[in-house]
Amino acid sequence: MNEAKVMNRWLVVVGALLIQLCLGAIYAWSVFTPELNRPIAEGGRFGFSATQTQVVFAVGLATFAVVMVLAGRWQARSGPRIVALTGGLLLGLGYVLGAFLGSSFLGQVVCIGLIGGAGIGLAYVCPIAVGMKWFPDKKGMITGLAVAGFGFGALIWIKLAGEWGGLIASMGVLKVFLAYGIVFGVIVGLGSLVMVNPPAGWKPAGWTPPAPSATGRNPTAAVDLLPNRMLKTPQFYGLWVVFIFSAMAGLMTIGIIQLFGIDALQARGYAAGEAKAIAGTAMAVFFALANGIGRIAWGTMSDKLGRKRSIFLMTAIQGVMMLVFYFVGGVPVLLYLGAAIVGFNFGGNFALFPTATADFFGTAHVGQNYGWMFTAYGVGGIVGPIMAGVFKDSGSWLPAFIISGVLCLVAAGITIGLKPVKAPAE
Image 1: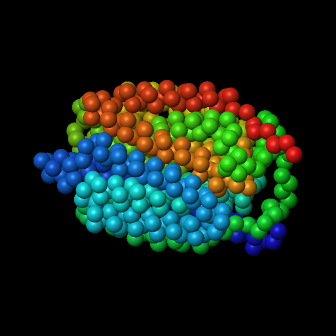
Image 2 (image 1 turned 90 degrees about the horizontal axis):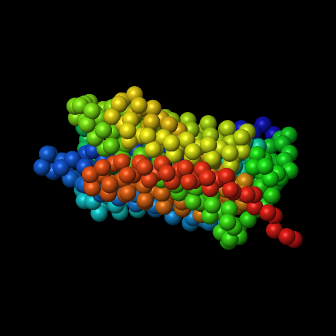
Image 3 (image 1 turned 30 degrees about the horizontal axis):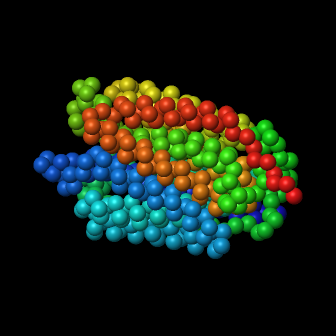
């Protein structure tokens, strides 16, 4: 392995971060929801209900997850570069069209939700699959790094649209869509240039693949299953359900934290403007930063603890936090702490489940297999945010937090029972 090859694999990480920074725009959705939710009678332009704001978000998440299945197949045939590039262009197009057609609820569902979500789904799997092939010696860490940009991207796009850049206040929601769409297309296009797989049979200098182990600590699977074989295993469905419950809690929080935080703080006597600023900081700083850090931290820890133990810890902690979050949301410091813990654990999903998919079913087809596993994210993205919006419109946020917390604890219990996949008989 020569030095050029070594440097090349780190360029993949740079490209992955550029791509993921833009794809993370979907997690910036909460910065738009107060303006979308403002009644027309009070000077608002859109007048969406809380449920409608969450439907746009949920459609984007679901489309993202479904299209990832197609992206996995396409990148296996044509290579990751063209898939990532197409995803970036489609994401940009969705936001640009949203600038012209997004005055209506249906326009936002189609442009931001369907078209933008499809672009994210195409581009997302490429950096993960490419990164694991270049870094078989550090799968957890490198996957965490590759997807960290997704979490940090939310911080950038929220702050630019909100208090740092003031883009929504100065330009309005639709012109922000236009500006973001152009930027997304350009940056993802640049990152896609280095999305290339290593040569067949390549491995890092000095690294010898460890022998498979049943302990869950070994990062190398004993099998390499194609999706049709993987989908016949109970391990897939166990891991899939755990991913649904774990992702649902974080996605619900992302979608509602601005509105929930404002309600909770105003109930404690904070003025509307002050409550909005505190809730915005909880999402844009504490949740978003912890989300990005959690991806790296959980990925790195899982290389030492094992994926199964890490998923158990992550879901158990998240379950407890969701059960208490509603009751602490009206206290700024506790809202910040809760947002950070939920964000940190939520970020762990995107380092742990790709690598767990590789551990259970093999690395050779991880791009295709993780596309199927990621449909769990789409289910969680539909159920969590819409459930919260419906409960809010019915009068209370509390049931949504209780349900999410209990399901995370159930996920921790399911994780304990997951067993390694046995190699097929020759």
